Length: 231
Picture 1 (cartoon, helix red, strand yellow):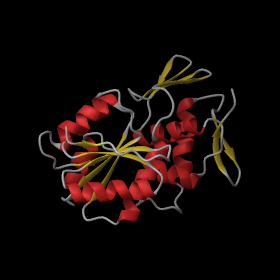
Picture 2 (cartoon, one colour):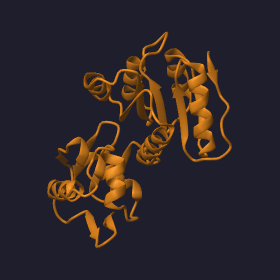
Picture 3 (cartoon, helix red, strand yellow):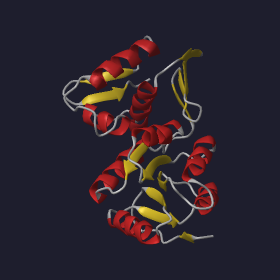
């Protein structure tokens, strides 16, 4: 199995880099380790499938064009399986269709080669904050969130949410009563093209509150952000 398991000693964030260009793979891994992350490397898709079945990762940096098992198939198997890892897909193809393909497969984010390393680090950090330290099913009072199946119910009543609404709810739940700012929500749920001065977050929060019903589960902390109301 072509797998390098030199894991950093620091860092709560565990990353798997899947890239068949070994020099690039090792450079990415070393750079992420310098940022305090624990990093493993797989040089082909088959090794990636094997190691993700054994090890829990927060983020998988996944090249799309891989030997043995294509990156698309690796992505699909990660999404279908129990792995909670967030997926950052790398591809040499910058076409919109390729980005859409990757996201449709269940990738959480996308980065076209060549990329600036600082941007890769920022994306991995943002995804790691979204990565669940919580179990697949989270229960808070009468709210049940099945993160694996992306299903939400309140007091036994199913609540249908958009992907963004679900992402916001997940982030607020993940903060576990701590305040999460609109900027943090924008960074973790939307992408880098989102306008930081727009009212996207407040509009999404308003829709989410309406769908979740009474009494309100998410409260606004004026000047700071949002938090889960204590139940």
